[in-house]
Length: 287
Image 1: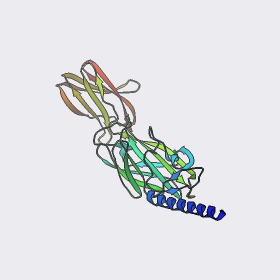
Image 2 (image 1 turned 120 degrees about the vertical axis):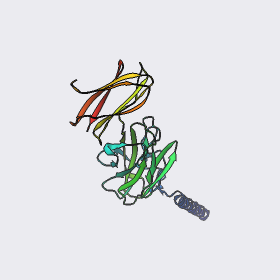
Image 3 (image 1 turned 90 degrees about the horizontal axis):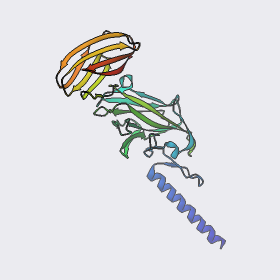
């Protein structure tokens, strides 16, 4: 009787080992076979939805470790001027840490309405995936890699300021899920047109003002649904008038104006656009 029990136990162990080996091969994961903690860690292509973005979890779902702030540990670099994007342009992104035997990450970029913004382009050791209306880029290899480089194409149309959410795992490479450190953070990618479009109720006018750092002038975009007289004033924060430009009477339509200016001192200014009896005030930062 004892021999039969041993044989049955042996067959069960063999079946369990065979099933475990098959699952590991098929899912390309490293599985912690601790019966008290059933967690998987992914050495490549982790599941989506682990960036720490709104309505998402983090890498801690697959790693039994500590969740920490990424500030000062994980470095994110973006090739856009002043961390800003121009619609439709291609940019370089890099996510890196100083060290780590085995590292992994996942990132998604969303707008203020937490909707997908732009498209990732794979680099070395990365892969992309779509899920739930969002796009993710993540590690496809992790051994000895401390820097993940890839590209991102900005949205075809202006979506305002964006935010990249990411979760980064510094694994202790112990072949188990315990002892890993999960770093969670975000990185803001700014609109190259920081001023929001504002409606002036009296004449249904839309005005947009921003500073063109390359050409050192003020860009003024506006739409008139009826004829109106326009004047643009620039003043300091203490109320001192620096410049006044009269644009005169304008017919209904869309306009793009370039306002030459001798303002070269860095700082914050107020641009006031007078449309008939209405005024639109916009803060303008010169870096």
